[in-house]
Image (cartoon, rainbow, N blue to C red):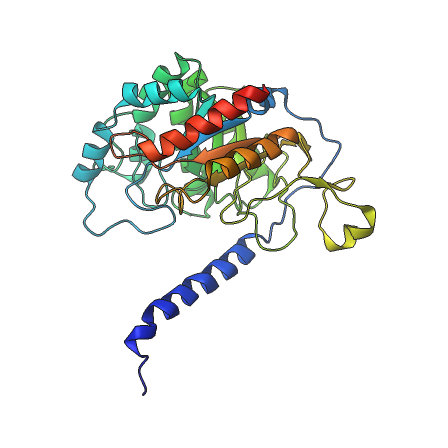
Length: 351
């Protein structure tokens, strides 16, 4: 068998990555809502703060790169050392200087490591053995940020064990309710990933769990990013409040599509293509990353592009959340801080 010339290896690897991204985005963009889309549905008034904010920040604080596997050398000790190193006040000082209206942090992801303890988790799924940190980083951040007028929000996978049985789902809802009731009104929003659930009833009971600590909290369910076709992201359930709006390598735009072009676009109501605030009952909202991927890499956009796209969404009554990498100790690097200072100053001029 003829082997590939080593000099072509980088090209082959690059093409494989591109093909993977194309097919994964296409697959994730096949969105099947489990309820009848209703363009007349009224927005939850609790969304108002999100619309007024115009922009906010998000970070993937994990043991692994998002959507990747856990490193082989990862241990509970390493994870707890990382969580314990997070400098809450220093990070809060940065957000205060940036005048950030709200902030999302990942409680955990598919790797099974979480930055908050949970006794209900251990009762149903066995000892966490340090994978659930000893420190409740979420509540510490929430207390510090809310005292400064910054809303605290959280990210969580829909099912931490990807189990489909009723028992696993029920147990996982109890785990969520323990976090929610403990944090209470300190949490203003939940962004739930991988939410391919079976029925409206399942979404309903999960939403109740997320809101058990704060009935005024808003919830969003994510089923995949904006893909490379013209299908508009829409709500996946009537039991959510704002559009998850995940954007990877494509930034969507807002427009009134001419009626003659309607057949080329999957348009959600009266030719409005991402014109907010109401996307069939959801507040218009997008989430994308400033780096080369979620939580990592150098800035991929100029300051002017970050601002202009954010402002474009704001002009159409939407809000943009930007994912920014953090150090293990919970600080924003100078290169990102300067970009966010520019964004903040420009947005404030329009308020």
